[in-house]
Length: 536
Ligand code: BES
Ligand code: MN
Ligand code: ZN
Image 1 (cartoon, helix red, strand yellow):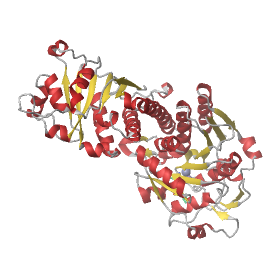
Image 2: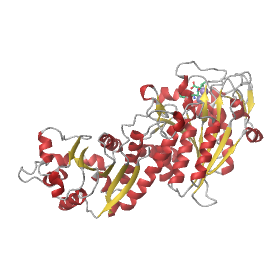
Image 3: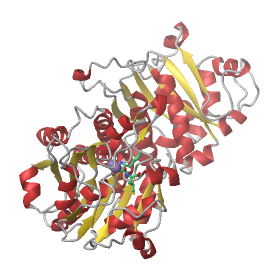
Image 4: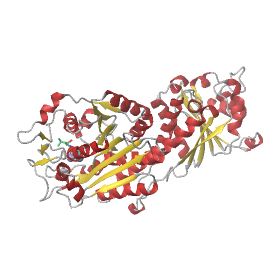
């Protein structure tokens, strides 16, 4: 089930200006909603004494206490309302509310902590607060809520509003995602504790109306893209095949303005993609090469190109992987899934830029027809590759795709791949690995990651690492040994990207979670969508 997001604009002045507080609260409380969500800061709490207290300074808490006949002070006495971020207290309507013109059924007070740090775009602390609020909403048989956290809607920094609103929507998406909801064929009985919640409305005033509306559109589009990326990742490898990825992309072309082209084996052969073809050789399932276009900018404008690794199952091939947790190699197409999800989001938000998504996709299987360690193949670029390990297959399919995209004369190319186990050793499950020699791209991607809490960490690409890829029998070897495994993988790719600005994201540690919480994260869709939005 997808949650709806919208905005509602009220003729409110700045809530932090105490002169207008009483009137603003009256307006909000008069809204018919299941739940009004109000933020209160540490400063609100510190000055709060309740209506019985003398000379209580005007604050969200004191005005609400006045409107609710002392309930807020009572909650403080009972220890239910605390002076800390993520603290939550819910007030439910009784008969006295309607007599006072209060139409909301509940008021949820949400501690936002130190007002200063929240307004100054400390996004991760904001996200914690937002998550706590959303969790409370989904646990209370609430269908719709009016979200009015002053630091979002009345902050003067418009980019802070946009980031916080997009992030709120992202958090709602993460908390309400259920696998199987969109795949009836999976007969998966989802645990739907959040199913009652359907609609989140962001309240704002005229000063931020435009930013709010835009951010809600962008955030909603991003969540749709993330949900699609998660579904594709989570689907089993006997369902989510290269053909399925191609059909999914073609399905998007039917419901959006995206243009999709899917090339099969014959066309891949005709293009001379000998490296890509060497990976698919052991599989009974045909490979596909998917091109998705969004033409939102001018006709001649250089496009941003995303290339996603689409190994729908990675057994390792003849260099077979050990059996433990091999099922998780169904997630080896998460780069492709993030590209499809990002393209979908791009189309939904009608981005005024040209963007192209390219996906080489196949399985990596062992068989009598499979590529052997020691085989030498010729890539589309003309460089020959000695395949010393058939489990280093991601780079073999990506290098031909990276050569293919030269034809688009791209503004920049970013590839996204679950490329190396070594990246998990280096960065764990926190940051995605970022590799690029272009400082502009590095800065833009780093910032987009911080703004969406979908972060990256830069790793090197120095010439010295290229030494490890030397082959006695071909132009390059496909592995560089154990030291700096993620770096040599990136160095391998860089040999095919000389004609344009390029960055590589290794998402091996961030694309999915293992263990009890096993599932796709939808990363790095938020990062890529933010990058596109913020790109000049
Ligand atoms: N898809 C894997 C990388 C991977 C492994 C991602 C585990 C997430 C979790 C990739 O194709 C691979 O097998 N890489 C090898 C490279 C090595 C043979 C040089 C690896 O990381 O072991
Ligand atoms: Mn592999
Ligand atoms: Zn792989």
